[in-house]
Amino acid sequence: MRFAIVVARWNAVITDRLLEGALDALLRSGARRGDITIVRVPGAWEIPSAARTLANQAAGGTVALDAIVTLGCLLRGETAHYEAIYNEVSRGIGQSQQETGIPHSFGVLTCETLEQALNRAGIKAGNKGFEAAAAAIEMVSLRRKLLEGASA
Image (cartoon, rainbow, N blue to C red; front, side, top):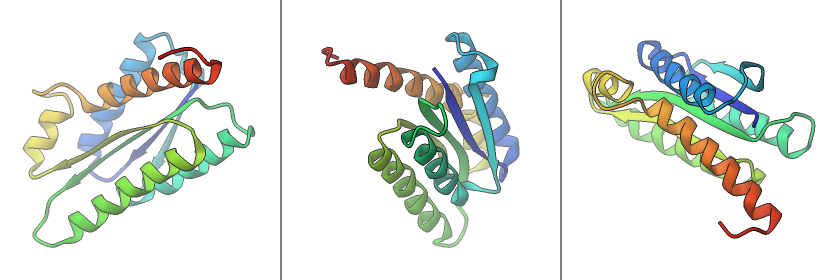
């Protein structure tokens, strides 16, 4: 299996931990480092654009890619900015997956506080990057079975 990980640089103290978790899951599951492409984008807002570009290339056969893991972190502030960004990021990732047929896993945290985000990035509540990568692996396997006509 070949994967791309699109990870936001904004809130790097969180997203770097998510990336470590995703890489851990992929490598533990047998992926080779050379089969994992890491694409860094400025922030969560840019994740759907990069994911869509990769998915279009994969769907068109110009890049060998089985799934995309998306990683980012949005922290609620005092304005509606958080909701606007979250809605568009989630919509864009979902739309890319649906329109290209390339599985995308969602590892974009939406947290109230930095402490909550740190906990979800591996300090207390597991690592959501690991979980997103595990979901991507499962979806690649499921997609292959479905395309072969096997029962899931």
